[in-house]
Image (cartoon, rainbow, N blue to C red; front, top):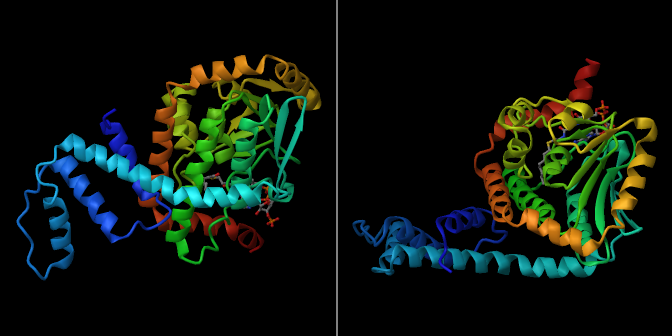
Length: 360
Ligand SMILES: CCCCC/C=C/C(=O)SCCNC(=O)CCNC(=O)[C@H](O)C(C)(C)COP(=O)(O)OP(=O)(O)OC[C@H]1O[C@@H](n2cnc3c(N)ncnc32)[C@H](O)[C@@H]1OP(=O)(O)O
């Protein structure tokens, strides 16, 4: 099958997220294929002998002769796909071996009655998600996809469901904010893809306030059961960040564009009942009976025929999957290229030093 314009655009985003520098030779080839796919055969005057960089680029493009635009586009997509898989394969292999044996204290994974329960378990930090927790969740979902789990359920320990991304995650990166942004973008892409790909029913038991990515992800869940104590807050503009986890696509679909904007642009915090009225939450329960009622319900659901639920989910998700990958890749590329670094650094400083300021 020929690569479509959409495949080409996905590949352009994919290139920005490569974990390893592919080297000059490959970069020249990518440049040449890109120019051929967009502008056609080389039409630029030949640069002078001493203009080494532009001469090398011109040579690479000119060498493609009259290769048709569509073929160049296909070759570009194929080359990026081979680079993406070769840069990811070794680390995934290694991870599979040593992470399986790893005990995670901040993400608890238990299995009972066909339900794999994945618990944010860092209550002293309101269950903020560290880089390791992102990786633990990717692994937990991967395992639950293939073992005898019927459904996966997320919940939190303590008074919070989850306070979102740990804001100190990338502050210690040795390469500064650029390295932090690049590492964060790749991790985020893999993390969100693991929710897009999860093939079985996925449910959130929202026991308390939810912030940031723990809210945006809910658009990818099949059921969201909330205590009436829960709140839903996405303060992205306040943090100089962009909404992630495909929420820019899923939230307008779920609640309509103006209500989505109220959350994602203006950071309006919703109560559980408001989130239910917008369609983000399936059902709200009184705090006093929340745990008993929800788990009784989920145990009943987990007795339904697993294969039927899996295939039904596949049928529901099938037409959206490619779109979701694209939206996810676009957001990760935007975080790399378009995030206002100064404003983000200022928002981080405000959070990190807020307690010291409050004492003044
Ligand atoms: C792979 C990259 C993905 C990137 C995309 C993700 C984006 C997001 O998720 S954006 C949302 C990020 N989250 C936030 O902005 C929330 C920040 N936290 C707060 O606003 C508050 O802590 C609170 C409202 C959640 C709770 O306030 P309060 O009840 O007053 O409790 P404390 O502030 O004293 O919190 C207790 C303890 O927990 C630490 N903490 C809470 N949330 C976070 C967090 N998100 N990141 C890091 N640390 C967090 C807080 O610092 C306190 O720690 P100590 O001072 O050591 O006690």
